[in-house]
Image (cartoon, rainbow, N blue to C red):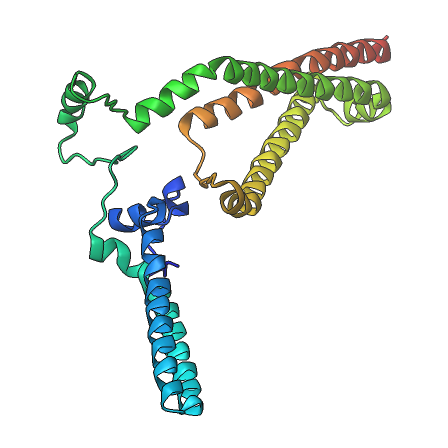
Length: 285
């Protein structure tokens, strides 16, 4: 068995899930040569048993059977202890004593001091004809993977746009229904001196406030879900969700949604503006 001697600082990558051992230890895990050494205690045991039988026969000639049985039991117990100790220590010492090294290494992680030499080294390794080697840059490999799933990303973006559009239509329908049910309130506002333009501004302001509160609630809910689910996802699947502040692009998207809500609110605002003008003209007539 292995004993963990230290824990490295977390990198929030799948490397945190690895158990790092030496090549000698890895070779000892996969090598079967230690099975031959398991027979050494057995051969040693047989040797002692043969010697014990010879001693027993010799003691039979001298009529000392009792002492022979006592010596046999003592030697047999020592042999078992020796075999047990040998088996326990063999797994720890076989790689170091025998200096076993793996014949093949499937992958090697290489760090470069100079970033400009990465592509040069990669080209030399990939063009090597003596060994079937392949050099892969992790960042580019991940980028290729995301490019492969670009269709999925585009689909998710389209779904997000549709969700925002449906949400704006729902808000528009609610405002229109509210305008039809608040004609008396609008008449009271007109009676106290509010102009049609003031009433239209109230409708636009209401839409802006509703959309702004919805955006704020959604952002807060997003961070709460990320905070709660980041550690379980990392412990279970090794997938780390880092809590980052909103980028400029994300702020631009949220601002675009807010502006869209304000623009859509012009429709009910225009209707209430016309209705207020008609009511004012009827009152003067």
